[in-house]
Image (cartoon, rainbow, N blue to C red; front, side):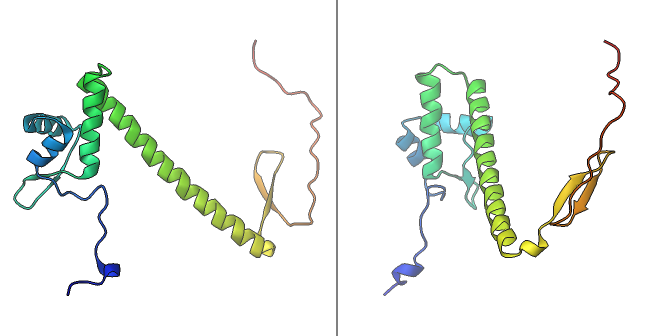
Length: 152
């Protein structure tokens, strides 16, 4: 009868399923071009147990993008590599920002629930950090001498 629908593995666009000939056909390229892009590190497919290349739907879309940049935008392969590296870096940074935002949101929720644990900090006269109580006030440090600003 098979697995119930809830237990069927889901397919995502990064699952390596296409052999090189199928991926080349889907991308509208020659398989040798895919091998060259793999050697150059532009589109690196997964490897099957027999060392054969396996491309995902994401890889095929990336191949089409590389082809677009090369043929329609006139970007050379070194420029394409640079563009792909920058896009990957931006994607990684976006993921990190989302992680940090989630941590901040969790922290805000925790601090609202446990206000007695929250801390207030102040800067001392030497620039050191001083932990303050919630009701405690700071002493104002008034500079009696003007600051010396080095030679002009």
